[in-house]
Length: 425
Image (cartoon, rainbow, N blue to C red):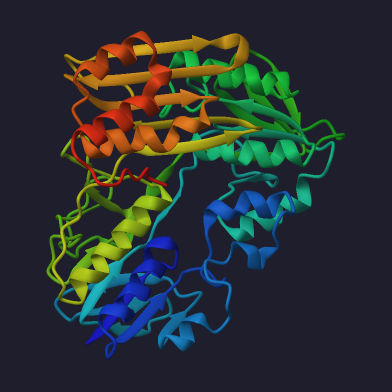
C-alpha cells in the first residue's frame, strides 16, 4: 500500500504520523510545494518579531523526525494534475507519482484584490516563510507600512508589524475589524484599542489604487475618501481561497473547497481531503463548510489517516472558533456567534475596560459566543457549545449575569452525573 499526502501543513503532517502508527508497513510519501521543511503558518508572526528563528516555525523540531518514521518527504514539488483512474499524480516538470490512497491537504492561498497597482514592487502578501523574509527586510523600525485587510489573519500580522515599531496604517473595507468573528460593538472596541496603541485604522474604507510615491517613500496608497497614505511596504491580507484549481477534470466535487463525507473522503474513492482545502461537516449547522483553522486541520488529518488505513472513523464536525491576541487584547468567537433564527442572546458591554461578552442561545442550549478581554471563559464557552448541554434554569441566571458561565458549566455537567469535569483546552 502506498499512501501519498499532498501538503505539508498541520493536516498533512498529522496525517502521515497517524498513518505510520495505524499502518506500520505501508509506504508514505509527503509532498510539499514549498522548499522549506514542514512548518506552521501560525508561527510566522513570531518569526516576524524575532521570537523564533526559521527553525522555530517548523512543525517538528528534530531533523530526522520523518526519516526515523520512514516517511519520505519531497519538498519544492508542485502537483500539476491528478489522474484518479490511473491512480497517479503528475508533478510540475513531468514526474509521475503513483498512489493507492491519496490525501489532498493542499491548503489555501491569499486572494489578490483587483486594485490598480497591487502588482507593484513593495506590495506583498504574508502567507509563506518566503513572504516573511521579504517583510522582515522592509518592515524596519519607523517604516511606513499599510496593511490592507483587518480580518483574522490580517490582525495577526498587524500585531507583528506593530511590535516591529513600524508606522502602521490599517485599511478595512467592512465597518469593523475582524468582521467574520466579531459584531459591530466588539469589532469597534478592537479598533479603539489599536488606535490607543498608536495605530491608524480606517474602517468602511476601500483602497482605490496603489501609486508610485514621492521619492521619500516608494509607494502611496490612495483611499476612497480622498486621502493618500505614504508607504514603504504594502501588505495585502483580504482573505484566502482553497487550492483546488489543479483538480479540474478529475471528477472530484469542489465547492468552496473539496467536498468530503464524514470519513473525509472526496467524491472519488480513495481520495481524501483535510485542512483548509476540505469542505467538511460543521458541528453547529450540520452543513459542510471550510474552517481554515489549525485545530480543524489537525482533526481532519487524524480522521482521514484512520480511514485511509482501513480503520473506519467518522468526523464529528468542526466548531467554528477563533482566538486572537491583538496587542494584548484577547478576542474569541465560537460556534454560531452571530445567533440563530428564533434564538435569543445576552450581552455584556463594558467599553471603558475593553470587555465584551455575548452569548447566543437556541432554546436552553448555548450555541455561540463571542468575547473580548475575558480570557478565563474561552475553554468553558467552547465546552458548553460542543457538549450541547441543556442549561435549564442556568440560562436565566446567565441572562442576568453572563460572566457566571463557569458556574453554569460546572453545575450542569455535575448535574448530568459526570464523574470528572474536564474543560477543553
